[in-house]
Length: 359
Image (cartoon, rainbow, N blue to C red; front, side, top):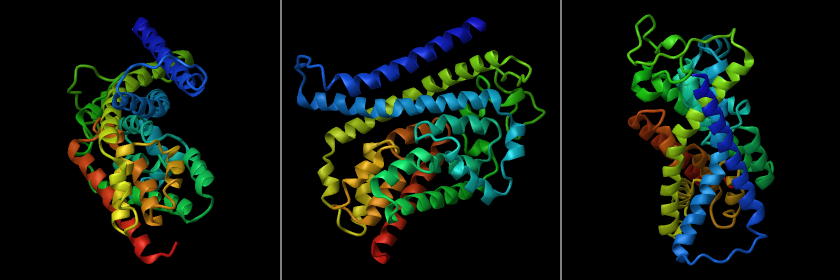
């Protein structure tokens, strides 16, 4: 067991170094080093470039989210969740949406964190509110939005409407008390430091139905052993979520390469069509929430204010890669409802702004 933990730790460190070095290499070496051109078709070169851009942009944040998930699995207990988190449904949803101020993760990194929190007894409503709100309601994204737009209507609209939608959708799911109807079976099943004492929600006192019960929480273990366990969980989470990230990046790249963006941008002045166009563009582009404000800034003279706000609100909540990651946590039917509710809520807000507010 100790040797397996050490192997996972070494693998995790190697992955971290590879991502860091790869990012630095793309940012620093490519503009300087002039390598011979590879005789690839322009379309294939563009495809590879877009895929690497999406993957390298998202992978570090998935890595951070996996690290946070590992620490939660080892150091947070169900008693901690019950003691410190609000029990009132409305307060729990609001607190969940604002939890991004504590865990500043984007739409990729938030998924493994939510999965581990659910295994610790996190409320359904708070988890969904955190999943949808954290990619915007965190210090990094708030600062980047301010840098792009200042303290104007777009800045306040993004923050306020993200909080409103995340809290509201969380409350919608709060009426469902049965975790098994919302959470995917693989998330409910304790895995490598999941729920303590091998318990499932609502099945206390019953023997676990899987052959590998979760290890007991051992506060007496040394800090080094617990950190090794946390890194082991983080490695598992990164590999588990990473395959969904790769598939999502491939789909997003395919759509970006073969679906002309001008098709969407060409309808950017209508009060309704502009909102739908930018929502579809946000879904296809799958841009990280930490940088999407600067992309939206380029649309200011082309699209309506309501469309830009819808882009900044909807994109971090739902895009191609995050939708696939959601399937690793929730049942497919629940993922469909989350995507539909986010789309319709953002559409309604964007159209309302275009028709009634002169910004």
